[in-house]
Image (cartoon, rainbow over all chains, first blue to last red; front, side):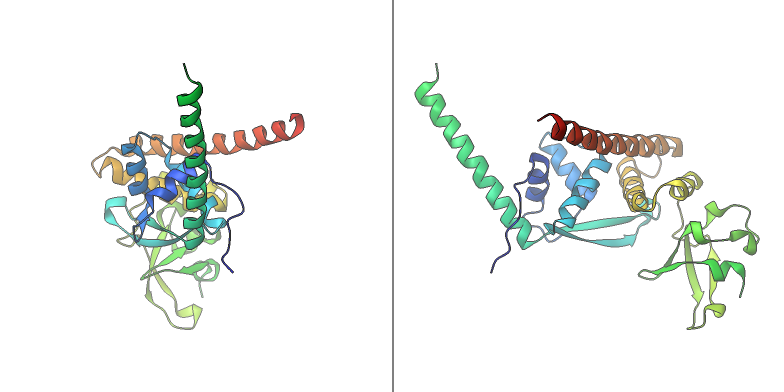
Length: 112
Length: 131
């Protein structure tokens, strides 16, 4: 039986999981920069606490990289979307699509 | 076996070992401050702990002193977050960036995260009470 996510995602969670689609692994700064390019700013701590929450819900997995000199000896943490995360993302996007579709139809039929 | 070896809590990592500062008695090794040894590299290790030899200030240990102090005082669950925030800020700003700028950026980011988390808890409480 396929496991189902137990809740729909918040807007930030949806954006974060979307960044992970189709990529093998990505690290926090890379994800933050992509969100920034989409016009969404988020604090670094906020990014990692959200990713931590998603990992606890098994929507992403992560692993530590090696310490690098570019980070003064700090390590990167690499994230990957899980199958459960992909299901949660699909379901949330379906909800968005239905809501937006309804709103658009209403605007056309009842709008000024 | 020295006090240093006895009190070290080691956590295996690739190629190096990480020492929990809270558990290290560095005075035994003649080091004045616990802030200099976040990362140590094991030079000689056998199955016997008393033959464990560590080198303080290994090439990977580039963390500034204030970061080690912050790590020391932060709750355990925030230590990984501190490393990630620090690493990202250094990578973003480049190695030439003055240390104090990185310090301010790290502290502000952590403070913001802390306030946001606590505010969410308060908001959830208020919402569950009134709505």
